[in-house]
Amino acid sequence: MIQPSIYFTPGPSQLYPTVPRHIQSAFDNNLLSLSHRSSQFSDIYKHTEESLRKLLDIPNRHRIFFLASATEAMERIVQNSARKHTYHVVIGAFSERISKISNQLGKQITTIEAEHGTNVDFQDIIIPTQTELITVVHNETSTGVITDLNHVYQLKKENPKALLSLDVVSSIPHAHIDFKYIDFTFFSVQKGFGLPAGLGVVIVSPKAFDVSRTLQTNTYSTGSYHSWKELAKYAQKYQTSETPNVLAIYLLGQVAQDMYRLGIENIREQTMIKAQYLYNHISQTEGLTPFVSDTNLQSPTVITVRNAEPDKLQTKLSQHGYEIGSGYGSFQTSQVRIANFPAHTIYDVKQLCHTLTKISTE
Ligand SMILES: *Cc1c(COP(=O)(O)O)cnc(C)c1O
Image 1 (cartoon, rainbow, N blue to C red):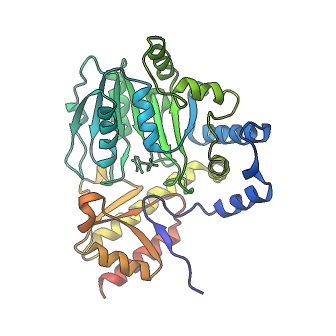
Image 2 (image 1 turned 180 degrees about the horizontal axis):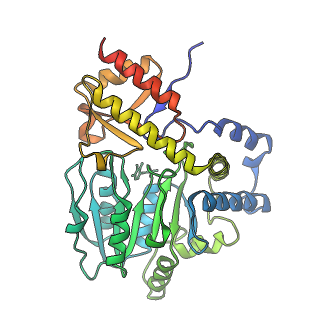
Image 3 (image 1 turned 90 degrees about the horizontal axis):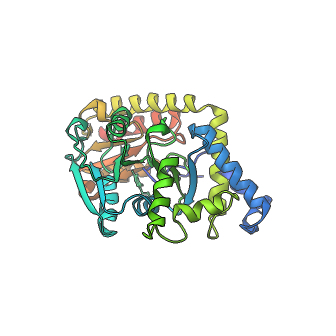
C-alpha cells in the first residue's frame, strides 16, 4: 500500500495526529446534528474556550470570539477599533492584507514597509498621534520572517492610546504571547493547530472591547452580526450569532486539550529543535539556501528556502511522499516553504531532510 503523503505545506498543513480520532468521536456522538442553541453545543463551546485559555495563558478578562477565518478577523478588527486612522507594519503579503482591508473600509492608512525577507527596524517607527489601530504580524508566512515580541510590547508601551493587533496565524501555538500588551490577537486553525480549515479566533482585550462600545454609542457602524457587541451577547451564553462550524469548534477544543496535556512547553521546545535541524540541513545542502539570511529573523515555524527549480524539487519530494509549499506570490519560481508545526514529528523532519539530500545529489 502507498503511504499517504506528509504535508509540510504552511497551511492547510498536516493534521494533528489526534484529529481523526476526534472526528470519529464527533460522529459517534452525533455532535454534528446538534442545534447551536442546545446546551450540548454550549458545553462544547465552553470546553473549547477554557482549553484555549489554559493552553495559551489567555487572561479571563480578554474575550475570545469565533469567526470564519483570520482574514475575517482582520476586517472585524479594523471595523471595531478605528474611525479613521490606522498604522500598519508591512513585511509581506499577510501583513499587507490587513492594511488593504483597512483602506477598503475607507480608513486613512499609514504603513512602514520592509524589503521581503527582512523586518522593519522597530526603532524607526513613528506612530502619528491620531492613530487608533496599529497592526503587526508575528510571523510573516509569505516570507518566513519572525518579529521579536519584545519589539511589539515596546511599541504598545510607547503608544498606549492606540490599540495593537497581532497576527499570530502561523506562529500559534508555538508563540507564547503576553496578552497584557496586545489588544487583538488572531489566528485560524489550519496552520499550527493542524486542523481542517474553516474557523478563525480573535482574542480581544477589555480596553479594545470598550473602544468598540464607544464607537457604537457615537452611531458609528462596527459591523452587524460579528461586531464585538453582537459576538459578546452570544458568547456570554457560550453561543455564536450564526450557525457556526460546530465540528471545527469541537476539534479545536479537543486538540488544545491534547496539546496542554502533552505540555505546551514541550511542544515549543520540540519546535525549536526541529527548526534548528531544518535550517542547519538546508544551509548544508547543495542548491538550497535559507531565504531569510539574518538568523534572528528566521521563523521557526515557516522556513523559506531559495531554490533554482522549485517545481522540480516539489515534484520529486512528492514522489517520496512529502508535500512542501510553493514560494508565495512572485517567489513561486525561486522559493519553496516548509512548515514546522506541532503535527510534524522530529522523525518526519529528519526523513524530509534525508530525502532532500538524496534528491539534491540525483
Ligand atoms: C494564512 C494566514 C492568514 C490568512 O488566514 P485565513 O485563514 O486564510 O484567513 C493571515 N495571516 C497569516 C500570517 C497567515 O499565515
